[in-house]
Image 1 (tube, rainbow, N blue to C red):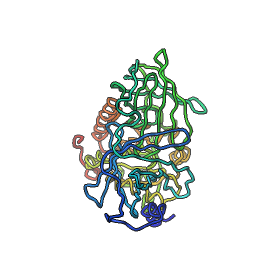
Image 2: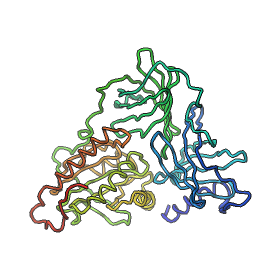
Image 3: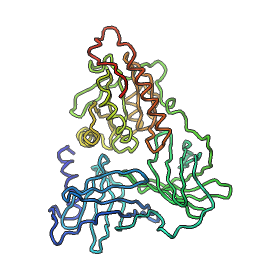
Image 4: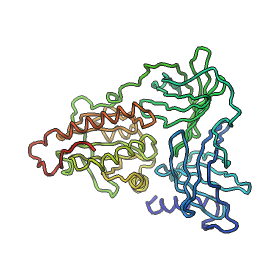
Length: 437
C-alpha cells in the first residue's frame, strides 16, 4: 500500500466503518460524547478489561480523549464522523478506537488494528459517562487482610517458563497501583484494587489492553493470570522479595567474539541508503536505537531520547533509530515512522530495518549475539567502536530504576563525548564538548 493510500485509509477509516464520511458539526441531531470522566470496558469471551478516560472539547473542533492509568495521561485526537460516530487514532500505534454515541449517551465500538492485511480480532468495548472507578464502585470495597506494597519476584509462564519479572506494587487501602518489569521493558502503569484475598490490575494506554487477576495465598504468595485482548493468557506466581532484581540489562545483548564495531546499511524514510561509515558519523559519538512504532517501551524510550538529542546534538553526538515495523514495506514504514517522528519531534535519522521480528533484526545486525528486545540501545564511541548495549527500557513509572538509568546515561554519554577526536578527523566537524544538558 502506498503512503498516500495508507494516510487516506486512516483518515477515512472511521467514516467507512460507520457508513458516513460527512462531518456533522454541532447541529441539533449531533450526539457527541459528554465532557468528563468515562469508564470503558473491553469484553473478550469471559475476560473484562476496564479502562478510564476523559473526553474534553474546549475547542469543539479538536476534541481530545485522554486515557488514564494511575498518574499516567495519554492524549489522543478525536475525529467525529456523521452525527454520532468518533474515530480515535492511537497516535503512533497503528490502531484506533472506532465508536458510536448511542441514544442513551453510552459509547459502543471496537478497538481495531489499522495495519493493512492484519487479520487480528477487533476488541469490542462499551463506555459509560460519569463513572470514575475502574473495578469497584466506591462503597462496595471488601475488607482485605493483606498489603501488597513492595517488591515482588514474579515468574510468568506461557508454553514454557519465561524469564523472571519484578513487580513494584503500592497499596493504599483497597487501591492498588504498580508496574511489572521484565528483561524487555515494563508494563507501564497498572491500576486496580484489592478485594479480600483477590486483586486485579489493568492497563490501556494505546497498545493492546491487559488485565492481571490474582489471588493472595495464605502464605502471602500470589498466583494469577495475565489476559490480553489479542494474545493468549499467561499464568504467573510471585513472592514478596525486597532483593528481587532482573538480570543486568547491560549484559544481555553483546557483540559476538571478534567484533568491535556495528555495521549496517539501511534505507531512511526517503529511501536513501545510510551507513555508520558515512561521513556524517565519523568522529562522533553515535546512539543507535532499535525500535518499532508498535512497541510501547520503544515509544517511551523515544520520548526520552528525542528531547535529550535536541538538547545535546551540538556536542559531537548523533543518533539513529532503526525501526522494524508490522509490514515489510518501506512505504508503510514512511507512514508509521513518519508519525513517530512528528509526534516526538525527532531530529535524528530514522532508518527502516524490515519486518518486526527479532530474527530479522538479528540478521540485519549480525555483530550482535542476538536481538533480544525492542527497544535495544547501543552507544558507539568516536572511533566507531561499540561501548555499551542496553536491552529493553524501564520508564518513569519504575521510579529509582528510571532515575538510575538516567544518571548512568548522562554519565556515560558525558565520558564518551569528552574522549578525544580520532586523528584525521577535524574537531570542528564533530561539534563541541559542552556539559550535558
